[in-house]
Amino acid sequence: MAKVLIVDDSPSQLLVLKRIVESLGHSVVTAEDGNQGVAMAKQHIPDLILMDVVMPNLNGFQATRTIAREKTTSHIPVILVTTKDQETDRVWGLRQGAKGYITKPVNEGQLVKAIQEFMPAGR
Image (cartoon, rainbow, N blue to C red; front, side, top):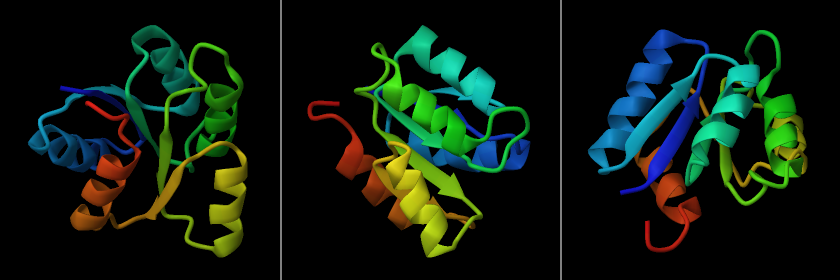
């Protein structure tokens, strides 16, 4: 069983994403903004992170960049899950260190495929 950190400021989105991840047999920890997401990543060292972009305080691009540059968390794959659907947003997100980019509303099949693709082997 893998541990997945979900970072999203929307309670309804957190519930949707949590349900999908748990249906795959993984455990979930959550954070409600980028600052909390970075702190939870350092505390829990999850196997994968699903990160919203548009959040208060530290946005998802900034949080992803921090996680990708931090020695203790740089190995954790981040998938951005966001309403920002422009190609420039996707490119920018990947440049910040994200491994994947999914737009909302989330297509469950697409999310499951991305989780399986980026989950470290054996998890």
